[in-house]
Length: 464
Image 1 (cartoon, helix red, strand yellow):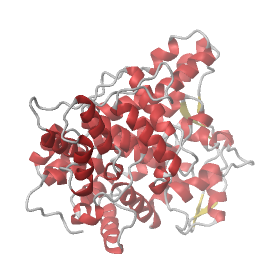
Image 2 (image 1 turned 30 degrees about the vertical axis):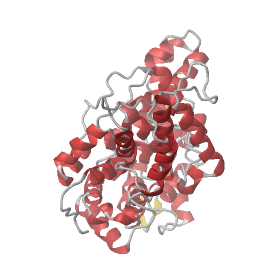
Image 3 (image 1 turned 30 degrees about the horizontal axis):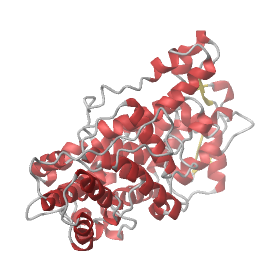
């Protein structure tokens, strides 16, 4: 792929990078990335450490669980706290790509809390995406395959010799590695299901306090007595394959890099990848041993990524929309506000930890159907005016959007700053005319709130 060679790395370039590789950013953060230049800005995004700005997360699932005396209430409290835990991370992280890629993998390896019913198993899986998300794809798939949440969600804990359950074996090929038209057969699914027999997990009973520690720490187990040791034929090879063998062969298949790279491109760049760009990125995948960081580095430093056709061309998901709004003004969330943000995402069509099905979210225009768009505008109106949206419960609050305007700012300067803060550039054309007409020359707090609403409700802000 052609590398991006800017005459200089502009503020608009940095804002574009942070919208796509993160969730938008404040003016100060965008300026800091701009100062690094294109290559170092990408390296900073790819550098992950434990010190990511989320250490003060108020949502401690273990404490929430252990504070209850009844097991059902305890598990319910943990399930209720889990979304707040992630929302806090999304808004406060200093490593935005870590959370953006976690969101991508959450949609790719879609798993529903509604069925798993154990917040700790779901949290474990979410953390796996941070631990393995930038590394070798095979290692990530192996870890997810053995995660108790996935084992429960796709029923592999019921997969035993003589009565194979094909759910996980099917989705591994269809959704997680090769893709629907990746060149596998129904026989491959049946044979690989036999290889996953005996894969299960152990977890304590939530209604037995003596087992609470095990409930909070579910673990993968392999029961050899339930494993089918017969020969299996899979993707053209025959042997006494184990589940690990199946994962390795699926990840090594030639269809897998094409499928995963196409999904990464759609999520981070645009709906359609050219044949040349795909071929180039497959080469990067192969030379790096399937390392996701190498693929993303090549994407984020490419000419294609920064081209005009790939700017403001992707509809923001509810998470990108709301979290980006809060990060733009450096919001510090109280616990009840984090839960309020989660409920806002839910009514806008994206319930974290509960994707609609095993395929995850379709995205695109689904995010802005008539109902979803109305919910966005209603919620944004409540946030911009610091009023509590009716959709939120009494213990959940909408964080207000507070603009820190320089003292003595003029109306023109305020309009410019609103555009730079939320859109990455000063408003122009029809949007600027709308803002100036609305203000009518006035520069009062109410006018500023109205201008803020108009910017974050504008078509431009719905696009990344």
